[in-house]
Length: 252
Image (cartoon, rainbow, N blue to C red):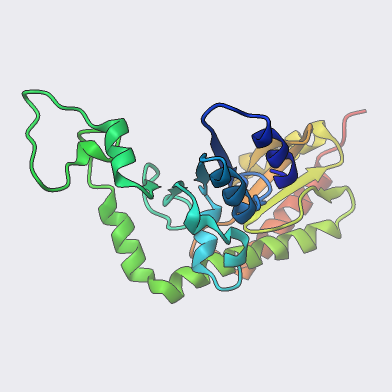
């Protein structure tokens, strides 16, 4: 998001405003200028929501937290724990600065629902019954600690930069994004070749990555998030990708 364009739009808007900003784009890893967005939106009494599925965890790292500067002043966040925390898939977090706003949106009151003076789960999430997703998230955070979480984030970002640097030197490969966090977008010659390389890699079973489309071009999307990944794994991935490209003849 470009803050200068947002400022123009907000200046001509007379309706209530919700601005959805992003930290850690799912393809490129890029982050919106959150501090500017918050300033502009709050100046017109708007609400700022931050999609931080990947990037919100950058706040745990002294090296990368500058990318999310200002996020603490947003009105709500959403992030995933199943990515960088490596916990079960449906462990997501929604955080709202004003508890009464959440309760006003989600609260349900009927004769058969018990109530108490304490925290009612149905006042804070969409589901009234669910498994204890908070337990593995809590366990992961306690196990990693501040230093462990910071190292996890920084290692994954290092692996992304290492892969991008290696693959950029391979003929026929283009790194489509500036590596910001843990995401790398690789293109192999053209759309058809890119999809064929991805298919061959997946069929080989040694590593896994999926396809995406970035600015109209097919790409292989590589996302580093596992705590156990090391530099040898990154080099192994580079070798697999290079070999697969060599084995796939571009269509004429």
